[in-house]
Length: 72
Ligand SMILES: [Zn+2]
Image (cartoon, rainbow, N blue to C red; front, side, top):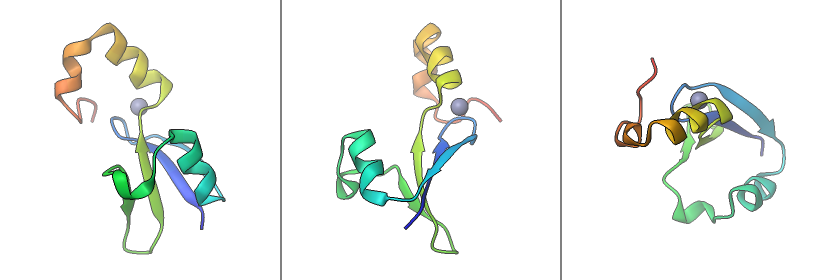
């Protein structure tokens, strides 16, 4: 099943991985332990990550970690 990776902050699509297992290897966690994996109505799987751009912003502004959606 293809998994789409999205930035949880700016909703930017970061890419799609065809092998679901590979995604969990990349993020180093098991899906059942995550609340960042979402299914939409079409049965597509999304993994919510943080893109490089947002990670940089968060590094420079650590207090923004308090807000999940500071970019709209
Ligand atoms: Zn982002």
